[in-house]
Length: 159
Image (cartoon, rainbow, N blue to C red; front, side, top):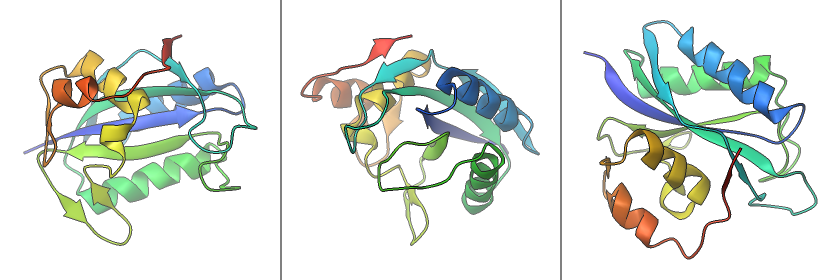
């Protein structure tokens, strides 16, 4: 049975719009995986160091037979193929792919936490997620609508 998975995408280097489109195409080509839908692209301020370009963010929904750890390895391979090099924590990047949700799974290992540990704090995740799955329930956190209501403010701009 395929799993319902949501992936967060972000980029702020080397034509971010093209990077997100390239990543979405790569996600659609993963084995035993279907790209169901993706959100619009949103512009957001950098979360970390402010001496970097604004980010472009999106969220997509996948149906996949891949196990969480296999999916994580596949995402990391896509990042490497697109030239991601981690220069500094929360720094600029060509592409960033995060598993946000995997069915109703709650998982915590050294390499992977599901739901994503910062999901509920990030407007650049919650708003695009609500665009494609407005009635979503986040395991351990409640409804997506209630999480959006608790955001202090949002600086997102649709592209």
